[in-house]
Amino acid sequence: MGVARICLVSLVIAVASFAVISSEGTHAEDSTHQQIHQLLADKLAAGEYSRRGADGCLGCHDEEEPFPTALIFANIHGHPNFRGTPFEISDSSKLPAGLQCEACHGPLAEHGAKILPEGAVREAMLNFGERGNAKVDLQNQLCLACHEDYNRMHWRASPHQLADLACANCHEIHNSVDQIRTRANQPSICMTCHLDVALELTQRSSHPIQDSHLICTDCHDPHGTAVASKEIVKGESLNESCFQCHTEMRGPFTWEHPPVVEDCSICHAPHGSNQASLLKTRVPQLCQSCHSSLGHRSLALEGKLDTSDPNAMFAFAQGCLNCHSSIHGSDHPSGNLFRR
Image (cartoon, helix red, strand yellow):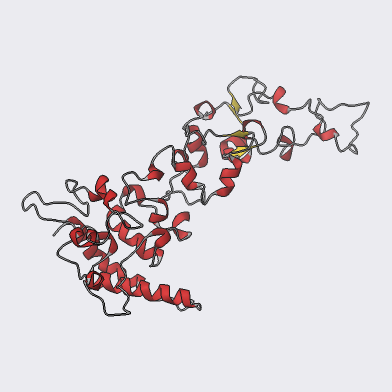
């Protein structure tokens, strides 16, 4: 029995939990979708796989189809010499050890009928992503039957899983190259959903994502992380992720600025900002969101502090950083005010 077949045999146990039709759908479209979902779940449980494998599929699904399939043989999923792939060939028997196309699309069953009665509709096969005809959890369960390894161990309950995102919404299987796994194409694919990030990258100061010097997965793990957060940032915290590049800010310092130790995003917008150095607002307003300006020696005084003047709190010679240049931390004996 091939590895792919073993994966799907174990999957049958899980299918039952996905086969229950939700009673919430009230529209005809939702009802039809649920019926197809139930049909596909039943087919997986029945396991009526064909003997011809891909030979039977490619007889109809050739390169003249709107969705060509032959490019799968140019990537690892269609490679016969890699262990665990749907098209794996046994070294001893030279016979197909995997389930080929049916490993992902489910048993052929009546879908492969040569002749259909007049007016009959061909039995559905499982489709994925934008063309998906089953619920996302069933689509993803088939992918995870082989791919739920260490790199994806935190997928369940991750933000993308909770958003009902299918693996095939991002990944391309019937292609020689999975575009989201290339540095040049990944950001644009992510930003088809994350439009707010795309907007931030057009601002005055931003990380170099648009020219691919930095890409989304350098900082984020789209399949989930051990730290529960909607940002799915790599590392034990946001700061640890930032320190992978900004090592000079890591510390520890003799004199530490508390917000720097707590969270870089208190002061910085990670994707982009109209202020210098990705600051959320301009200095000194940013500093004075925590620090009171009352009594500060740089205020322009005429004998006394005029607290009625709304501009008095911002009279910092255009920026606190002119004096407090070591704002991330200092090791100097006199650095308690981050001035050196």
